[in-house]
Image (cartoon, rainbow, N blue to C red; front, top):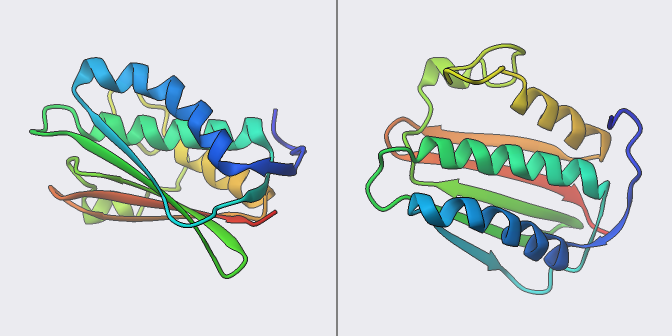
Length: 154
């Protein structure tokens, strides 16, 4: 579906606000506190909006799944510009990822979820690459995870 992305100039704050309206309905009943933080004037990004929405939904779903059974579950999304790029950081205080699992994060069909396919992060990384973007995952077991998406500025 996203083999040939339709990249265009997108107002990133408006894009995120629309996305937040969608995900907050899912987070609220689960007791997940969702905090968006926009640092400075974020402006426009060069993205395929449908592809980036899919990437964000995947990252946010993973974050919310990691919060299952946690006390005071929270997801913070921070977005800012740096060096001609837009950085989107999704931080959760969930279960984190073991060192062993971190080594296999982007390998197809590798998952610890009972209902997972092991393709979510693989597809997200591929979509980001097609938009001249990158994905970085930092995680500590029992402490949480930070996923950083790095996109071209518009």
